[in-house]
Image (cartoon, rainbow, N blue to C red; front, side, top):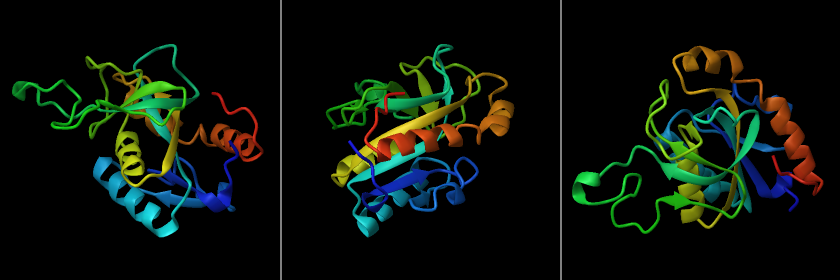
Length: 190
């Protein structure tokens, strides 16, 4: 599948992760940090630009020492949702059918929450971030295709805050290379 500037929005939490001047031909949207900001920005962008695909790039912490570099997310989970006391599975929003959101792309599982992870919690995902699930849910709600690529900036441990600060911009070049391959219809498996 070719990804073209005219039918795509690239959505990123922070400009420091992927400065717009690196991709002057592409429509860039910056959401700010967290699920609420991501959901609002995604919904506004989908309504304004009516893209065929929303492409998310950002950083993530890895909970799996074998997951590193630029990766694609295959499934999105809400790691903040916990209403087990009411009989619902952890991660399941009450009265909804699925714990995960998927768009059919291969990749790892990402748990999204509004806390920066600095110790490995008991989760069922390989990576953690703060926006992807909200972006995926917005895309699904509005009928927009969605892909998410994350650069592993840290290992979600006690040095995560320092590592994220030092590494947040390092994946931009890898993402740009991936995007150029996708633009020309090449193999985009990470």
